[in-house]
Structure formats: C-alpha cells, structure tokens
Length: 120
Length: 106
Image (cartoon, rainbow over all chains, first blue to last red; front, side, top):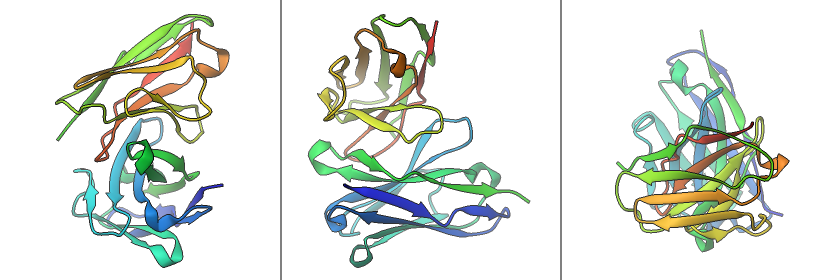
C-alpha cells in the first residue's frame, strides 16, 4: 500500500525557518511527481509546490515563491520543503501528496499532515 | 495565473437529494480538473480526475462533468456520509484549488 508520512512540523517564530520531510513507502517514489499542499486552521486547501519525478522542474504558488524550496532524494524515498522567512500566515497543516500520472496528475495519495505554527 | 471559483460556498440538503455544485476556471483548462472530498480533521479524498473519471472505490453516485472553463460535481442521492467539503483542483500542471463547497445537512 502506498503511504506518505510528513515530519518536521512545530512551533517557529516569525522570520524563522523550518524544514519539512515526507517519507514515501509502498510505491516507486522516483516515478511520481510530488506536491506540497497546506491548510490553514478553518480554511481551504492551498496547493503550494510541486516537483517532477526526476527533480528537473519545480513550481510554487505565488504566496511562497522565493521563500520556500522543494527538493527530493529519490534514493531515500524522501521529499522536502525548506521554509524560510515564515510569517503567521504560513501557520497551517502541511500535506505531501503524490501526483498520479495515470490520473491526470491528480493527488491520489496523501500523508496525514504535519502542523506548522508560526507565532511569537 | 489560473483561478478556480467554486459555487455555492455552502449548500444545505437532505439525505436522498440530488445536489450539484460548480467550479469555474478563469481560463480554459480542457479536462484538467479533479474533485476532492474532505471531512473535518481528515485528509482530502480523491473522487474524480480528468473532470469525469471516477476514482477506484468511489461510489457511482458521484458524477463529474464539464470541460474548458465550467465543471460540475453532482451527487446523485446524497448519503449521510457525503456531508463534507468539496474542492476542485486544476491538474496538469498542478494548482490551484477552488475555495470549496461545504455540503451541510438541512
């Protein structure tokens, strides 16, 4: 069974940095595009980044462009999100999600999420 | 950048009702759209991809339609477990999500 598990969330002060990780199992991680999605408390879903299977192409939502960097290590079945210059508006549950190429790249497997709280 | 607008934001309905809600893209996106269901405290669940293809294991009462700019998710005969928030997502390439439609019990 394909599974994703995020880690690295926590409490950070405004202006600080944090690195999230997502570990995959049960599928060939290196064959899939991966995404980060977040959800602020009581709010809707926000796609924030994707990275192609080989890492050659990455894209970001305008809200995180220039502050967040997505990367992956296919040998470790791991996806990462380096977050810098954090603000209170970045407080959210952060999910990693797999893009399924045979399903129009829709996100078919999600991790349980990791909470990031930006507060002084 | 492409924007997705969902309407209505809230919908009250009864068990057994047929309900529909829409997702409009700011520019044509062919059939590059997916629909998700999310219940409180839970991870989003993929229902439909490529605008109208039912994800494996999803009940056939969920029907996706549309292409270009206008898309619709219909739930034929609403069940108690269907009360949730529904989101559309532009795919290929990814992003953004629509703002969501919350389906509540009347």
